[in-house]
Image 1: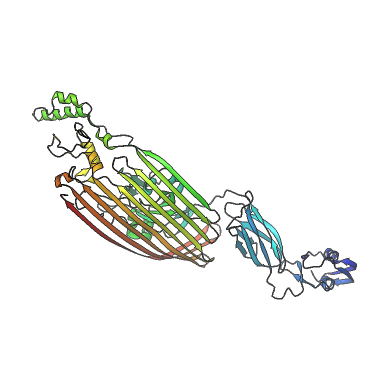
Image 2: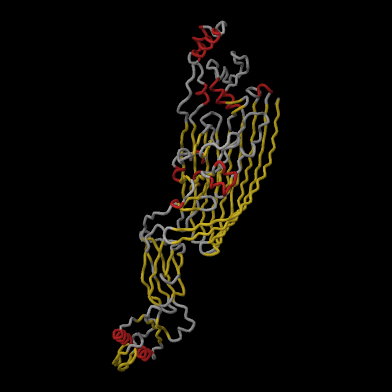
Length: 615
């Protein structure tokens, strides 16, 4: 281009006009800035059949300007001496929302064809240095917004501003599923995995996450066997696998396998009163859950070993998103009741049945006609122990962050009365999830959950079982006697002390207090494109205290002059995982995903329990 010959006759014309004449004759596009080239300077020059390069050099000599041929074949005018140590120009600007005008964080701005890019900061501003001189195309991309491209001309040692206003756009994302040591896209999943989303968890008021699985995952059977608030549901993944051993799945929260007070043995069983303890995941706040994945096939065993024989429930909690600061408060009030009770005989029918039994045994009637007439319908024992139970929940969360740090902080309070008198659950929870990008290759973060639960648990087993006693109690006996005290006399049919279910529920003390800490800290490093090393340390600490006391006025304390027990269990479990993952895509539909790693886990449990009678 510079070797082409032209003829010019410039007589005292402005430099800008001279450059236009030369460019027109040569068919050349010149790139320059008025700050570099004195366009008003006067030029006089005449030549015939002279090369373009020679003409430009002569015209620009007095102006102190040199000619630079760019990589795309164009000519840029620069100050003389600017080429010494030259590294290019700078592209800067701001990315904003077209409607609100607010800056958009974490938008990726790329100079097409150069490999240069940058991310916008919290205010939407970006800066790309050392951009080659010449004309380029700049593209900005952000999830949830339509991409925008703009042309830009870069001059040596100059800064050019390119602003972008993005329009919101609904984006169809590939569904990502957690599979143990990582994630995969749903369309690439080969194992048997069912997913429950955060919206499904929050669509119904539940006190425990296992209740949220009911009817939401194929092959997963969830049976609520107790009305006790916080009690665990029976979860079976593809049925039971053992006749004698446990069939409960393994629960993993943010990569930390949970220990349970049911696994490790619940203290406080010296008196045989069936103190079962709370559900192991009762301390988790359902509002903090982002997703639940259920691993149902043998592939779970490759990751978690024999513990995964009954399946694995992976619980992933929420995290903050850069540039999307949000404060959320949620509350609900619900009423629980027993929709249907078991049909039983009333007092008169019961008395007639007893007399029939005595008659069949050739014995005189136990109840006289006058007694039967006085009974009427008698006592509805199911109605005596059931009630409308309110449930109150309050959740407050804050999330957000910038291009380097994201956070999610939440606190929750749950108060749930049981449908059986004397039972309730209160829970307080706190969560802190942090993610920090130290550099483009190095990231750290943590997941921390603190919870405290306090429950009044119904005695269920041994000599005191509220539900069983309510179903078998004679309707001919009263709940209370004169003075409002509970009837705890003798059952005339058996001659034995009567286990009044209402008294058992309200008079016996059976409390459990659980304090739990679940957390992990991790570090990730991108060794090269597609190759990532991750190291994670996780802890699960559970302290459980149970207090039980039955006074001498009700069973079973009636037989022993009062009895009580106290048990405490403390479990500490830690895990240390190191994994390396390689992902590579071939074309549009082929990919390679390799993972290898090691896991160390140790769990220690200490228990102590004491019991006493006749007090």
